[in-house]
Length: 273
Image (cartoon, rainbow, N blue to C red; front, side):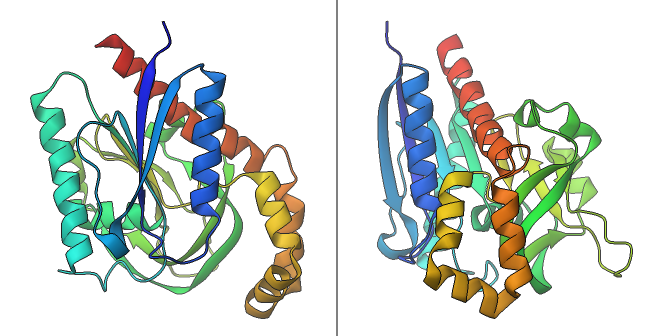
């Protein structure tokens, strides 16, 4: 019998043009088709329409987005978002069939802020490009990263970061840091948290695990996008990204691995109930 699966996507892009929502849509639909699943897919505009999904979905993916995670304190949309997150926690504490949530970039920062697992702060400079990510000891054996190299590569685009992990809170939650930023011994800055498992069913990445290599390649080749990247980051950065998104062992492998691993685990748990 064909398995039915319901996926909710929380859109935090605030109406900004982006590649993230396209990537999530294409990845989830391709995965469902490959698994022969009957997919229900619904998007919720959190920041503009104050929309959040109810508990009828099996899987939740919360997107990246623009702006500062520090400036949304007590806004209506952040309050609604944190209320939704709390409702997911309550559901998982009261029901045998768990709800799985994946947090991307801005959503990851918000989740870290919600749980107080570290210091959310502005970076000294924007992180933009293709960078190595280093799994922690726990991350090496976590099913989220099964099939990846060590280090593996990601698309990173952010002005903010999570540093100074609160070990007491992380331990009390049963959370684990899964990956950290590349080591930069030449600069006096702490390595940022790049991925965390907040619970057995809630996990997130600071980077954009949803980015597809082919789409990013076409995006970078658009003349207006090339101008934006080169004006802000230099022609060398643009050329480096063009080269690296075509490497099958870098962005392509990350795209084919992390979110599919998350989705696969979610349907295994759903089928087991």
